[in-house]
Length: 237
Image (cartoon, rainbow, N blue to C red; front, side):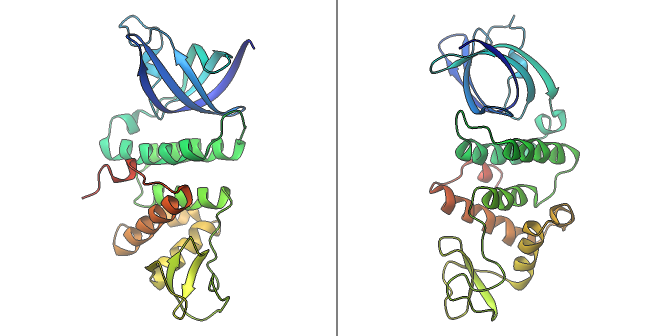
C-alpha cells in the first residue's frame, strides 16, 4: 500500500460524515476504485469542486485496504458543456450508471475507460439522440453480450427478422418472435452502430426510428444487468 497516480472519471459520489465524500472512479489502470475525499465538503477544500460525476481527472491517491484516499485531483476534462446543460448531464449520468455496474474493482479495462472518455467528449461536442443508445450497444458487445443481428437468434433462419430479445440472443424471425417488435429500419441502424459506423449512426436524426433504437438499447441493457436503470429515465416524458 502507498501513494500512486491515476487518470480517472468520476462515476458517482455520496456523502460521508460531516465533511468527507466517497468518490467512485473508473480509472485507466486499476478499473473501478472507491476512495474517500477528506474534507471536500468544506468551503475551503482545495479540490472538492473537481470531484463531480463526469469529471475526468489526474489523481494522486493513497491505497487503503477498503477505501483509497484522494490526496490530489487536477482536471483533465471538466466537460463544462455537460455540467451546464441538464439534458447533456442526464445523458452523461445514464452512461455513468451502466459503467458503474459493469466495471470491476481492481481490474483494469482500458477499452472501457477509453469508451467512456470518448463518449463524454462526444456528448460535450454535440448531443445526439443516439449517443446513450450507441454507448449501450457498444458496451453490450464489449461485455460479451453481442446480439445476433443477421439471422434468427433462436432458430438460425435468415428469413425476415421482426422481433428482438437479448435474453434469447438478439433478433428473431416471425416464427420465433418474442420480446419486442423491431422494425427493419431500427435493425439496420443497430447493425450500423455495432458494425463500426457509430459516428455515422450518431448523425441519424431524432424520430421514431431513433427512439425505437434507444428504447431497445435500454431494455437490452437492463436485461443484461438484471436491474432497472434510473438515470436514463431522468428526462423521459
